[in-house]
View 1 (cartoon, rainbow, N blue to C red):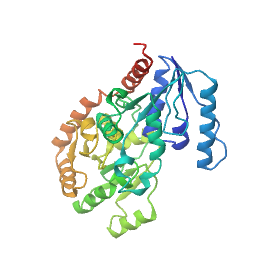
View 2: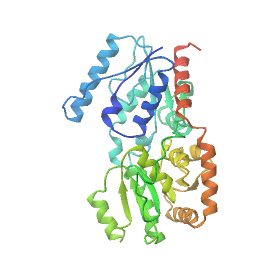
View 3: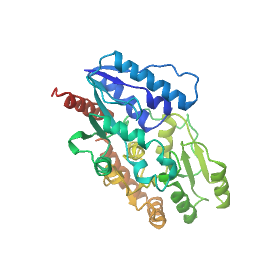
View 4: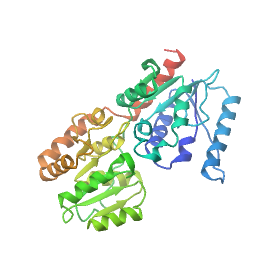
Length: 345
């Protein structure tokens, strides 16, 4: 099987869930088929011209070379119906469609995403929740969709306390961007209401350093010395999970929620919203709350911080569940989708 992956997502982000997903499946699917990945040196162009330039390159390569499967790494104008090549598109969430009326910045890119979806011969969704939303919003028939869960590293490199300095204060951990549907302000509000800043910090990992508006808000709340920021390689992220008192995922919606699994793999107790795919992925291994109910979030965080028995209970539940989610399973099931699309099974 001759499989082509373009390089679109690697132009869009240096680190992130989507680039991690393709990196992990590509290196494993190479054991099953003849894998080709688009290689184009990044030209010195502004981003909009860069993407157009890359799309031209991808279309030209597809026109000249013969591939059985084309699996784009993100939605783009290069994703078109092809005569002799089957197109498989992965849909990670329906956040833009569900929340663009509430958060205007999410409206960008919906048209390209929609065209990519309708030009696909088959669609992979990373959760049943995303599949249901896709069927409902775009009317895609279920036989065109396969659900393949993401994976997580179970036995990665565990950092030593000598390599990274252990935090002085215990902390509540938050991962990723803090805008729009990520619902970070609800967590910040809960942290403020709990009045625990003397004993705990709120550590935000990744997602870009705090904006002036955020810094001003922290100061207004009297939290300027208690809300901290960190970023770095995966081993530092693992270190942050391993030493957190609790990890909180407050999102209004997630198509999967990979940080849930990362926390569980690093034996970190989880508090998460009950929105989107989160209950499907977390199962019984996270303390869940309604995403816009700050009182519920306060209760969940306070319960975890007060009871070591409760933390250990959820740590053990997470350690059991997370072993069902491996990148090997993701790659194998993805290749099985390719076989199904090509009718070779």
